[in-house]
Image 1 (cartoon, rainbow, N blue to C red):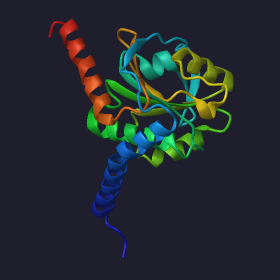
Image 2 (spheres, helix red, strand yellow):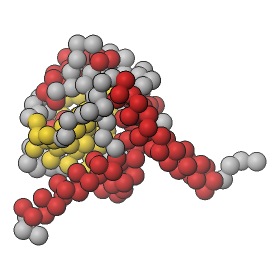
Image 3 (cartoon, rainbow, N blue to C red):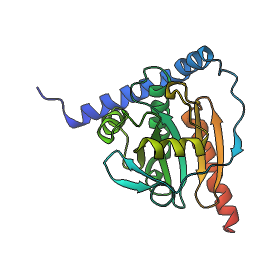
Length: 209
């Protein structure tokens, strides 16, 4: 007997919820193992190198500043698909964040995941990886020429000569103001969603509404 669509949807939701539930404990263990269990509080950072062309998971060339960020709020993570430790946790956190932000993702908020291993992480590789975490249209996955990717990573403070040792962090930026905040370690989806909503409140106050 074939599984019905509602039943399949319920199963997917349950599996996602289980994954997110396990993120906290697993992430805490992993951060402790890497000496990052005492991550500093989020702080303002300068981000450079955004006016560059990369390739998304659908093989389309995109200008990071114009096509990906624009005037939207963006939340950026860094992974490589052959990673079996922290990177799947990062993707699970973003999957949770995508759920928390709902229909806003793809409109005024964009989730962005940049590979730190552009030599191996092709668009098709990223697309298959994204599907494991039910990534929607508002969650962009970026790769490209190694020089271009590495320049962006350097501008974002996420580069390491050995990509397997890349800094563990998430960036949140406001494309309208150019202001960026760095969350070191692995913040959870709730914390990131609250920060996004805080940026919304600041935008509303600035607009006088």
